[in-house]
Image (cartoon, rainbow, N blue to C red):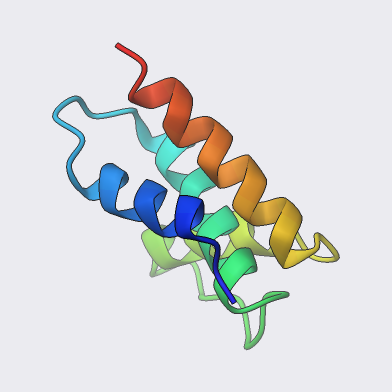
Length: 84
């Protein structure tokens, strides 16, 4: 079950006015998926789907990370992004 702090961070990401860049967005995507779904499932998208492949790789890199730890990392990144 997601913590209230994590749910607030998810909402905060949607309201960002400044683009954090692809690397940060991929990291957030991977952490979100790990926190909400667990380890990566399914097959890796092919070379004709570079966006899907990058997202899958970002998620798969976090295999074995506990959902609670992924939530905490996600919240920490969002806190840094919104601390202006």
